[in-house]
Image (tube, rainbow, N blue to C red):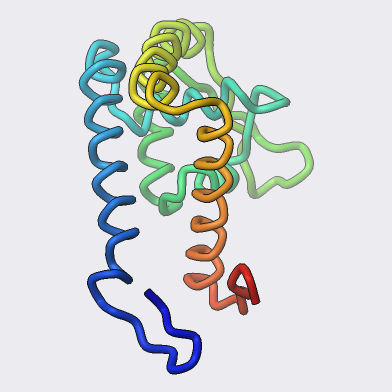
Length: 166
């Protein structure tokens, strides 16, 4: 734990949350891949791409926004979009507001793939999360994970994040 008087940290106590986060992320990802992704014959990133497009308010997103949401590099996301486009799952069009940008949207085949994947994903999340936690615990978990993500993002971006409770 952190001792505010001396700013010292026991390495075991300090690393325990990271170990738990990583172990949970790996286990949940394996469950999602094994029970929801593999049966679609798509890769996990393409499934995530379709999910984000399917849940966007406008049903289309700029490539840069997909990179931000997926937390992946522009080159990697561009290659995934290329593959999804070649498979007939997404289409690109020029952004009328920015000639340098493209808008990505799902095709009918992409919507069909999402309709196959999303219920499987919901089932896995239900089995892994909702069947083991109360609604209040799920809300707390989401809040805590969002705070950790925000702090990590601020650290990576060099922002001056103020820790909770200070």
